[in-house]
Length: 310
Image 1 (cartoon, one colour):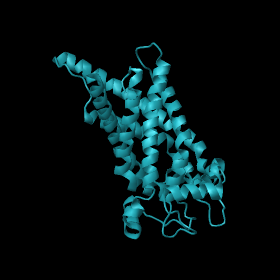
Image 2: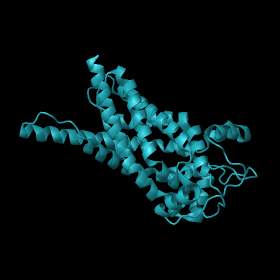
Image 3: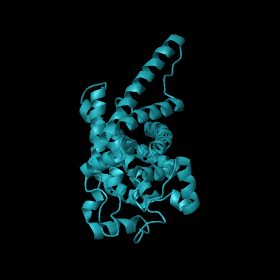
Image 4: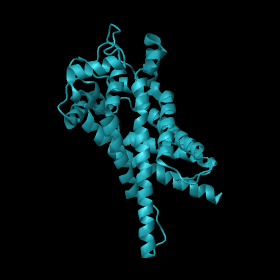
């Protein structure tokens, strides 16, 4: 994520992002299942059991559904995350190079615009995968009607029974969630510059020659930037998950559109309804963000060293 990168390094960004996304999903998926179920639970859905808190949800799912329940929707999650991170880092660095032009330094404006553009393109590319993932995660032993047998079956069934539009349920709040990535990357880049400048000054005064960031620095930067983004955008995640639910056995949707989901959630559940699953989300995303950026930066540095040797 350096301020100036040769254009032919963009594929390394995509590879590093994909590896980072895969590591993140494998580590955190059970918490993602819990988060999704809390996000859509409104006390009125007979398909979903009531959980007291995150530990109770993990224990209950593990006891009643086993490892398969804790990793429900894992395949689309891996596919979606790998695609999302790979495409995101590729689009982000591509946009940053374009916005920089002949400039030597980046700015907060360039980081923000690059992250927003990348997020929008990724959202349009991967929304169908997230719809399938959400529905598989919400599929419990109490589910009414024929359950999906897996990713392929879910995808085909949605297309057959609901049409291609159903694969883009939650797209609008998903596009609003572009601000999440924009906020996260802007905060990450700005904090990164501050730490590098601080280390450079400190090393100059002590006579040291290296001002490279460490794994701890990457972990701290990843978690800090993620926390800021979560606080600002979490309600959009809740609305998106609610829109992506499967219709009931009569084909009736619980929420007609984003406006209906927003109004119904506010009226029946209040402010608290927009932060369902927030604890599970923090437990999932803060360590995951650290792992993602540790993996990304280290894989990227490794690929650069290999390329320089060639």
